[in-house]
Length: 542
Image 1 (cartoon, rainbow, N blue to C red):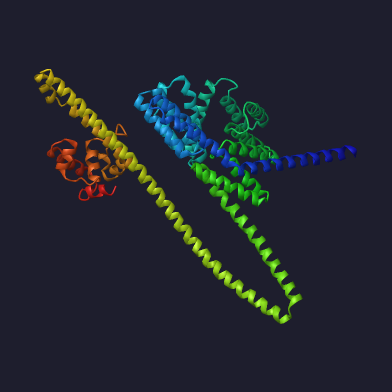
Image 2: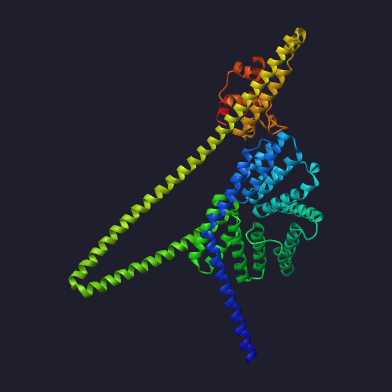
């Protein structure tokens, strides 16, 4: 009997301690939620300092390093800005003709796209990399990026055949990576833990996870990730208290590290909602939604879109019940006060007035509700318009910069040409000067540059132009590109027609062909089209 009493007392005591621990953790979490802007300001300050250093140097290698640090600050904080700076680094690496830096930037872009839920785009970027040309320092990250991308595709695809293919690719890259990793490194331990988890050996997985936790500190994304994975392990054993404990720790660490691409808060909200803590669930899911919106995370939006309406509806229903109780209490108190102060006649009269007021209030509320719906719709329209204007402004800025750059290059080349002519004249080298003026090399080089810039700019505005043109052509007459970033002569002619230049003589002047050649090209393409009569008209609407 004493043993039974002791066991029950111990279990009760442990439960009480665990509940107190969870309550204190929730208080700490909410304190960090209230102060999240402080952590965000610290990150913004670090970014501003890096941008200030950028203004002080024009050395491309130094700029690449600074942009790489800025990207690391934005990587889990703001997807759009992170993508912007990694794209800048890709351009810098191409200008430096440095394959090491270029591959490094592309691998980071692949990982960024994976983390934001853009798995197919990530694979496309990684496929641009020549694996055989990678340095030893990049191969592990290359395998990690592929592994995570195919893991995401396995999870997100609904097609069994595709899921099997992606699963095989995921396993292949995971095995390749595991064979290269040094024992007891973070990535090796993470893979080993996942293998134990997948094989349901939770005890060994927890040991590995504990080993990983010893090497990291609270307030980092790594800590948030490892504690989240520990939550997944306790999920197998249905240890609900442990699940909540490590989800809370993960969420706290995410907030301290200004990680907006997080999952812990949203899952914690759903657990609290299932337990009936609607107020906390509503606050947490709203916080998670704001983070996902700030980061622009596709994965988080999908999850929140599935869970937020349930929590919001329950929260509104709870508030409605509380409001109803409050209103009923007020009416009851009013009636009691009226009974004490007024006669029955005045009480009935007051009830009638309250009834009229309630009907008026209902009518006003209905009108207000309709107005709010219209206002929300207008706000959505304004938001869409604002985003479209932002995109237009980006295109304008991009092409103003391109135009100014080209203009500056042409001025510089003309100055070099002028100096060369002057040199020949001063040296009385008339024959050499005449030979120089007869050479078409300069013109041919400039024409190649013109075509390259035209192709790149046009495809930037109309990235799907070639696919749309092929839809207008017969199956056997499809246009294939060996290089997706360039256009051939037929496509350039069609691109100019798309831009409103339909006169063959004008097209001939721009592309430096004879009018007959342009006419022959147009006639050939027109014969290859499905609808010959309306082919060129249709191009303008592509």
